Image 1 (cartoon, rainbow, N blue to C red):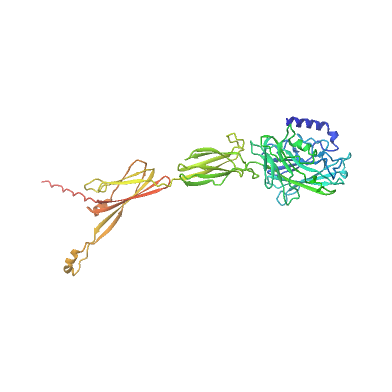
Image 2 (cartoon, rainbow, N blue to C red):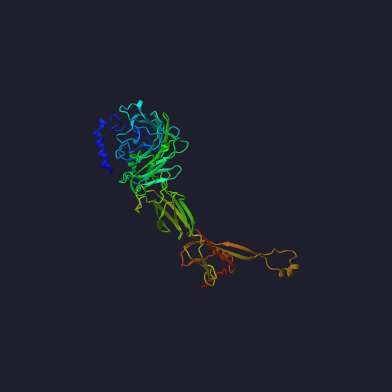
Length: 556
């Protein structure tokens, strides 16, 4: 319906070029601030338009027009008390006629000048473009008899998400002025006319709309001190068109009907063909009229935003098994506006499988909790479901994080020893075997040593015969020799006993045959989580004497 209305108006404009040539251009002249990520267009009657890098359409209706249905309007209501409204202005609204509204063909601004943009685009020297247009109710509209001259200054800093607009309204009527100033726009964010209203209290206050399917958003940001602009008197996020008249262009077209606020501070919550507006009513106050030759300033920022990357407060977290990890995701757009109320859907894969969704809070945060029931590594993947359809689209912000849970419970291992002689040492008895049994998969390292106690020979002396009796009463001196045996390494599975043979080198058995020795076996088990358990067993064993060799009988 909006497109049919736009086509009708366009056809009417072509047919009526001659009739309107004296007051307004049929095709607006455009000045362009070309930058990134935003290019700004300014029409000769102050029409505003902008385009984001990578987008297929502009941010205001009509999406393909450089002169958008967005701009500045002045309304002069009939006043119930003095100072009286000037007769040629009373009850009238001045502005421009858009492609789909508003329709102000008899009260359009008269274009006066458009300068080429200046500046380097830096914060100290932003791009700057100045356009002037006038209210002129005379039959021969020359600058000398303009009633009002509006100087519109548009600025942009390269890389910014906003561009600034200031309107300096100069009274040239010869008498005081009482009026409303209104800025309104028909939003069109990333290929769609449909969106919901947004308002944030700030400061600064923001009124606008968002495309629920893509997360694209935009609107007006209030400018406070040190600007000379007064605060908004009223605002509204509403429909582009409504049969009851509660729509943006009906509000603008009828803003001179009463000396009270035209907007009602409401925000449409349903997906509609959406629009928005703000107004300043300070100069309706009879105590604050705009004197002749005086200038009133109004200013705001126009913001256009896209979804920012999903952020996590930690991207690689760890905790003991069974201790939950909570990772907080932050979902906002590039202007730092949170996606409040939108669902954040997540899935956890790895040791702990889980999926779910969390509502994003007023600060743009949503907590995701991995319970960590099982030890191991998890991958958490989450996305903002802007259109709440349960499926991620390419434009919906997504991110991932890691969570690792460590088992801090050491393995429980039992060590048993059987036999009473080392392997391959000869002698009687059963071979000595160490058996290890653990309750979880573990790498077992068995280290063994032998402590051999041997007598120490005494040196002979000249007085040995005199002290033999005393020497017999004393204990014989001994020394301990520790022999480390070869380390054995193996993998133990739960419930499966692992035998480890205990072998003594032949050099030891030959040197200490028949010796009673203390064998110390230390078993260290390390599970898959890195937990370590150590068990030590001590056992007395005897090194068997080698069997005597039988002499071969001589043959006769």
